[in-house]
Image (cartoon, rainbow over all chains, first blue to last red; front, side):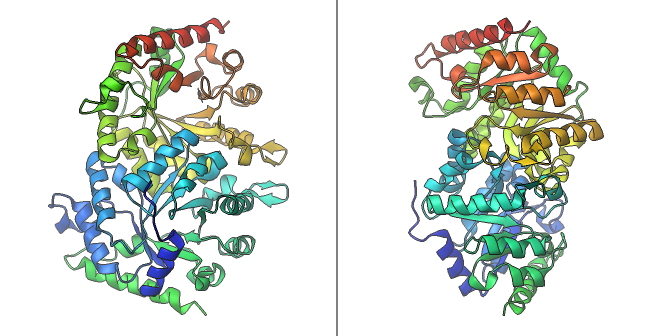
Length: 275
Length: 275
């Protein structure tokens, strides 16, 4: 196991301070949506990501590539992912969005894939299978996991809002995440969708020291002002992820300029809502 | 989209009848556990899987490679996975165990990765994110998905047994899976761990026509007789997965002979419990 001297939280705070930013850019790079002139290159997805990273590395607190967008292109896609993760400056945290989940001996292999092979700083996780499915990740000192709690999509209504013992499933999940974080000493964060801002306020109360990764701003329609107010962002407790509204901000040869403008705009908007 | 003329269920039943078998072999191939003499080869994991497939292809109803064991070795691992899936005879269903889950536009990419790129017949899925996270998979005619319902591991106690509206979460999940199966006409199956045989009996009652993928026999200690009795296996409604107890049955140069013996023994044991 490779140990990091600096833990995930410290690395995130350092980059957030350096870039004055709580914006995490989601590298959900879809070959059908990238600028046409890149499609001739050997590795269009990597070329696209490289431009995005060059344009935004001083404006973001983290990057979050979503595994699905690379897996869709098989080996070639995995190569683009590896090159992308390697291209991101060492000082910027990389969160692989893979929503991993499996039984203990298999979870060990997933943890190895993301922390040893890909050398990412963090990974998203789906908690449905319970403690032994997250435990192997906690052996990787200095890394972190963001577990799904309340997701930003419409399907969050199907199971996450069910009430058990007077609490919703997502509250029960958050309580367990806090318990597991305390028990293991590992940086177990939570994914809380921006589309549920009132719930976010309540979740911050029951998890006062948990890092929140917040998707759902932009295309999905979350309320940025409320999210900034309720998420504990001023205490360096939240990363706000935006994917499509940043990475597809332009589609000409100068797309990177548009991407940079879009990232600065969102970063500054977030900062304007912090007291 | 590549359409299959034969649907997943028909393909499974055909192979189950041909091999007189409900045994699905889990290709959870760990480089640290494979026979020593294979480790010199260019692609030890593929060489191992090739021998397993040669030895068991007339004894199984399906194969289930678990993505984690390939992802752990990066690009080289994905190559081994692709070669393995291609090596499995076309008539035998391949279920990729990846417990995928994400929002709609991302779930589309996952579905493309498993059905178009890897050309698998089915994939496991984690239902925590609800309907829109499974819906894109249902566009792939002739394919199937097995959604986690009640898992075989100790962590299944953390959330799956919570009671809401007088029902456990896993019952609520099963009810939704049946509803989604009926609504989409897609082959949505369920993962139900063999370690919970009484619950399995009840789940079969509430989902009389759902395919069950049943892990947890062997290393995990599930009760095979009860599982065979309760799972609807005699009506071709269940696949029993065994991984470690088959694939690591031998470790010398003749390991494939031991693997074959182990597979036959479990297949015949399953058949002996069917009325």
